[in-house]
Length: 252
Length: 228
Image 1 (cartoon, chains in turn green, brown):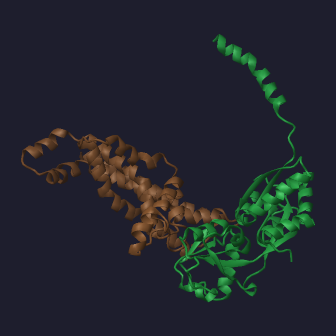
Image 2 (cartoon, rainbow over the protein chains, first blue to last red; image 1 turned 60 degrees about the horizontal axis):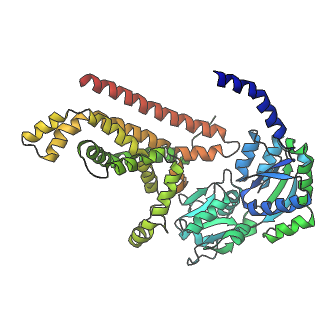
Image 3 (cartoon, rainbow over the protein chains, first blue to last red; image 1 turned 180 degrees about the vertical axis):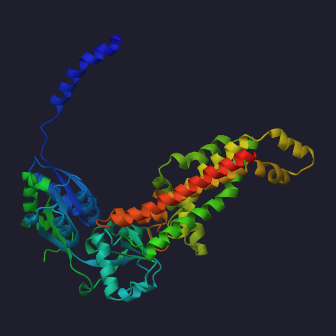
């Protein structure tokens, strides 16, 4: 009992100690970015933190659709980078992002990768493959672009039952790298950055799908943080564009 | 309000198919294991006990990953046995069956064992003394006396199989129409904005099947309890 009372008396002291010990928090930017941007955004954040030492980042990577859904459901995001305009427009429609802050920061290309020994040189050849990984078109932009291309070239029905739906584009590439699928639709940047065992068979012709566009925006909470707005501005500087180019993204 | 497409119907069908096949294949295996653990004394009992129950405590994702390491194109069994024979398991519905079997196995063994341990040993001994062979005694004494455990174990495993997600998504992938089960389809819908209605509809299907299984479980339990 004595012990208990002593603890009770200590409680306010402990509580105040905890409060004092809390550091003056540097402004933390909650960043929600498309999975294909992972390494690029990591590099961008590091470069930004060098200029603004006070800024720290909390990063969340995933399929753009999954992120959009999380933001819609109240996830703490300040900056959102999508791999297509669809999910950005979706959040704009829901008034979850600041429409005035939306800006396109990079472009990408869709490619088809697979095991080097296969004989595949264009989209028509892939109907001979047994398993093909694509991002789930419901939430993964890379899958939406791929599905668009398959539909436009009229082979989507032939591939029915052979498409493995991945949770994001990086998982697609992983499936191909492990050899569990013969081929996968990924971005040129993913193939350049991460492909070790697979090779790029062909670039999907641009006329078959809408351009892979990366828009960025501030959310309502992001608008209140000056460092988040500064980060957005930074993304459009030549220094940042150089980093995008380094990882294989194009700016036009 | 919502309309199920072909891929939704196939998700329901695949779920039921995988759970049924996994249960049927596991039944004799689980019975054998339960029998050994109840009636036999041998070295390594503890090891077997831990191995059988391990999937109960392991995260299903770990199970999925281990299965992938084993059965994958570059896995241990995959490279040496499956590839030369031209058998493909990963990303087929067979992989979903294997994942379900591993995950549900401890539940089934437990249910059968509980029932088996309640069997009066003297009945088994008597049958042997009266001249019944080992197998004869198993099929005429033990199987009928732990029938309830067999049913309960099967239903538990079936129900667990319907809900299997973690291991399945890793080894069977998410192929609509082939390996996409109800949980995987729900996951797809849930991770996409503006598909909540479909997710909810499939959740309802899932709940309905589970409720039916539980009712059957209770009903069978009561009916057999009365008879015993």
